[in-house]
Image (cartoon, rainbow, N blue to C red; front, top):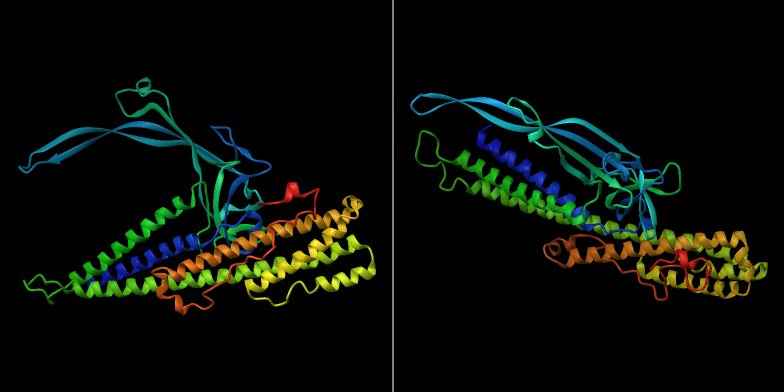
Length: 438
């Protein structure tokens, strides 16, 4: 194969890499941030603080950490002899002095999986396969160069102590795929699932900034390689002054333009499909939580009423508060509003029986329903953020170019009239102070 063709093929490979980097950044930018209580199976993004009940202590700063690493580097003075020859063939020799930092010791420790917590709760994160961005807690020079100085090679007396860590309480940005834990009915974020699994002390914008510039830089380099390969392949041969074609860069420019256009359209279309699928998934999460709420209300009614006849009547009424097979946020709005109406009816009856506050079954149902309400609110926020992201992509350039080719491209915001983010006021008067989320 001609060297020019090889260069062009290399350019195409670099272009594929550029779009892969852009896809990673696009995935992070399109993923809405979930509250920890709203982390469900599949791809998630959360922001919170690191926590572990039995943290490890860092080597230098003595901070309580979920992970840390420390290094000690020693500065060494070295010399080398350099021989050079000038234009007249005269040789000269000189001695150069330079300094290097050499690692002389290192330590590290971690607690394994740890929690990321926010105001809604916590989610377990196992960073074993993640790209982890620790923060630098210690970076200091110890010692005086003059104190260790001597004429020959060897240490100068300067020591550099470096420590990177994630301390308990540090703010974290986490994005990755969640699955069900083996030891509990709760999620754990522990894999990439085809995307970037990141655990970082940096902000999201800092994480994606290098990918944004790296993707565009690699794209420019790939275009240059394709055009350069075209010039090299179709330019003047060594034995002639005239080029093989009048514009040797034109074939490469055409190939680069077509490849970039196709790659950009594929990136846009696949991004739209991912966001549209996320809207469907977000609605299914709401539906699951409404089913859980629907299943809890009758049990609460049984405890509150204590009368079999009224129980049957109320159960019949509450069984109609969730439509099976719902597939739109509009139907979900009606469902949530109907369930809330039933809960208000239960509230009114529960207030007539103060002794229920000491009933173990009633308090257990209170806590479970309170948790369900918070999860519904988190699922609703995730759904609405996903719908907003989809609408923004579909109605702005360049996303509008492929909007018509994406199925289910317009979602409905979930905003039930009378639906509350936490347990309806008055249902759990002794627990709301600690469970309500705003």
